[in-house]
Amino acid sequence: MKTENSIKFSFPALSMNEQTSRAVVSAFLVQADPTIEELADIRTAVSEAVTNSIVHGYRSISGEVELCVKLLAGREIYIRVK
Image: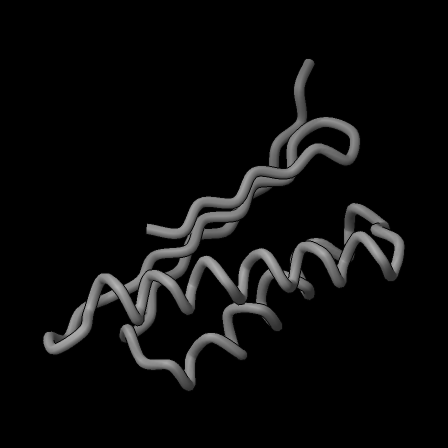
């Protein structure tokens, strides 16, 4: 049987929230026991995805960014930035 744990949260599309999104993803993924290098790579990917969403999706309008993180069986992860 496949075990899955997940979080989903949304936040205003403001550049200052990019740092918070990295911190939340990092804290959630600690349960997968990632290496320092793996965690650094994930944090970079989340940072870039969130920043691109804010910069290119909400240039002159306000909005929300939604971040979904799933920890699947083993050490497989799924991250969606919408």
